[in-house]
Structures are given as C-alpha cells and as structure tokens.
Image (cartoon, rainbow, N blue to C red; front, side, top):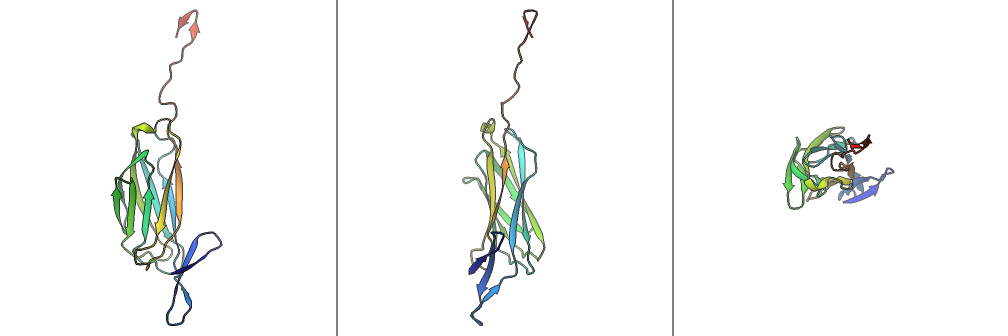
Length: 173
C-alpha cells in the first residue's frame, strides 16, 4: 500500500487499483485518543485506568484487523485490557497491551479500550512517565492504521507526611 501525508501530519492511506493502474482512496481514517481517568498525581498501589478511543474520521468503513498497542511504562503494572469490538491481550513480560479490532468500524464511529494498571511501590518520588498508545496496520495490510497519542502520569512527591518541629517557650511541639 502507498500512503500520502495529510496536512495535519497524520497518514491517509490509499491502495493501488490493478484495473485502472491508479490509486484509490481507502475512505477511512483512524485516529487514537488516550486519556487517564484518575487525576494526577497518583501514588504507589493506586489503580489507574487509561481509555484508548479509536475513531474513524472519514466516510467509509474501516476493515477489522487493525491493532492498538499500548507499551505501558514500568512504574505502572498492567492488570487488564478490554473493549467492545476488540480482542485484547496483556504481555506481562513487556508490560504491554495489544488489542486487535474484531469488527469493522463504521464512518464517524468510535470504540474504546480500557486499560487497568496499578502504580508500582517504587513510584513514590519518581519522575513523571509518558504512557503512549499507537495504531498499527493489520498483518495482511487490508486494514491500514497509523498514529499515536500519549498522556503523562505524575507520581506523588515527598513520600508522606513530615513532622513539623517548632519551639514554643523552649519545648518541642
């Protein structure tokens, strides 16, 4: 398949038509949006949910078979992933989610995958992490997809309560 760049920097796919020798617009355009459900900052042991929403922004139906891949940073342990119209699996070794579209996606329609994670115990005082999810084409190239979206997850800083010591008439308070 050949592709050309859209003005917004995303890919718009077309394929070669052997009958005419020209390119045919596939008439579907998939984009992904990633969001974190819980407010930042998050702390060790907290459950954090991410929503991965795939939308078909064009006039044609997108074929099934495209992938959504979410490589989750190591400070967040993936517990599960699911979404209607997707078959999702979790690779615990890579701490990664891969979901395959099991149904077509109509023009203007969206589907959402929910990824559930737990913040690792070592995340207190850690630097923020960027969690990125991407679209990928089907193995047989019948369903073309590209593009990514990210969110930043911030961790609690300070690690807990501090004792305040003051002097009142010569005594610790």
